[in-house]
Image (cartoon, rainbow, N blue to C red; front, top):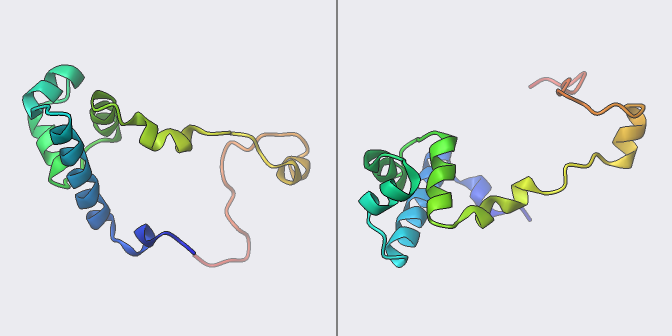
Length: 106
């Protein structure tokens, strides 16, 4: 069963992520200004993130680092190995870009 997050719009995910960041910051008793001093991310950008507005990925990572939340994205940094079947198909070459699926319409 797919996670229910796939049923949410991108905007809803931004809002939920923002609420999560605010809750974590408040739980750690850190003001936005203190987080700005820790991360170098402007207080307005922190506020934007907490209000579900679109910020850069670099700023999101900085905020998460400042709140000690990088472990939440650690699974994305996992194993970068290619499956043995795919490696055999590629004759040992590691793919650098996707070629798309032939014969399928997007």
